[in-house]
Length: 273
Image 1 (cartoon, rainbow, N blue to C red):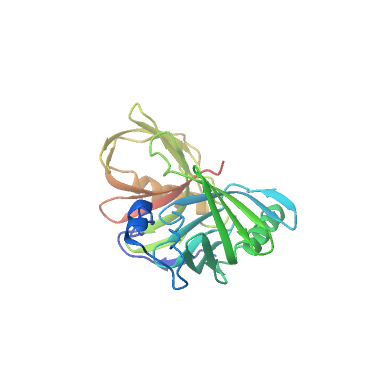
Image 2 (cartoon, rainbow, N blue to C red):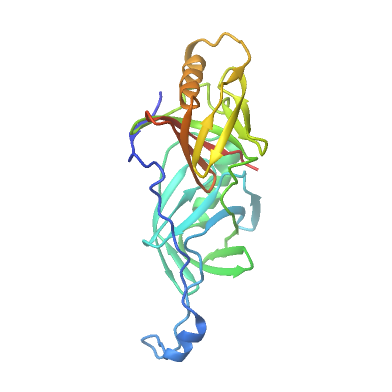
């Protein structure tokens, strides 16, 4: 069953979060103190950063992330991200070196067992009072039980050279997940030479594309000639319409959002490492 949801016209109306933390010199000069009289501790700069989960250690067992897990701490007292398969959101408060995370609300996608095991470990570790330690671009969060989450800051994926795997289709303000059995089939990669290649969900394709800022102008599409029936054909027809003529795109970390002037578009994600 496909999932439908209504979204704003600007699909990427996501917060451009600014890193938090005051200059330590000015803090000291102002004499800022805690209620107990001790000097205030500046918040560890966690907010406004896309943190890729690298490893999780629970009860002494260390597990490497399957690649999709990430955490973002917003400036509105909230943490959000992906446990490895399911999206989540939770209340969160940062006070100096301590990040306090409440119980998470999450989607309920069925996951393969190895990913589900990792997801369970990460969810267990990412709750309660967590001590944050930041060295260079690597962050560790340690809860009161001694469980440790290792994270690394990740810049936005580059538009050029990234293999983008289509994961949803858009028509005006409505976004639909891909039909069962068609996920991960459609993908595209934009190259430095002004071409785009990939698969439309059934047929391989290539085309020229002119990039001007966030504006795209596609040339004629050449593709293989397989007969595409059922849902694969529906996905292909939608993508051909989205890639016809002009379009605009936006990138949020691992996500690409592309839409034509008539509202036909799609979202895609950078393949997991």
